[in-house]
Length: 123
Image: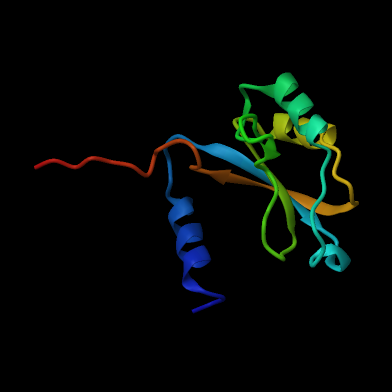
């Protein structure tokens, strides 16, 4: 196997996927910040929600008053944004105030939040 089976299998499966989809924009940290806590201005996340909703989703938990976009591990991902339009995700990223300089970002086509993978098969 090349680097583990989950990513490889998922990538191959995505090549043939032709149903409903969304996009995820992942921002990446500079290597010197990988082991540091993540910090982002929560008000800027809520501002992005007010500007771009409903084309962006699952950014902030308003009941628990905490961001949902932050990665939790000691890894290179700073935060991820989900939505229906890659151009809107880039605008949203530029609205959010991360409290460190980001290295780069990537946008992925996904089936997150589509329920496309849930199928009921009956005889």
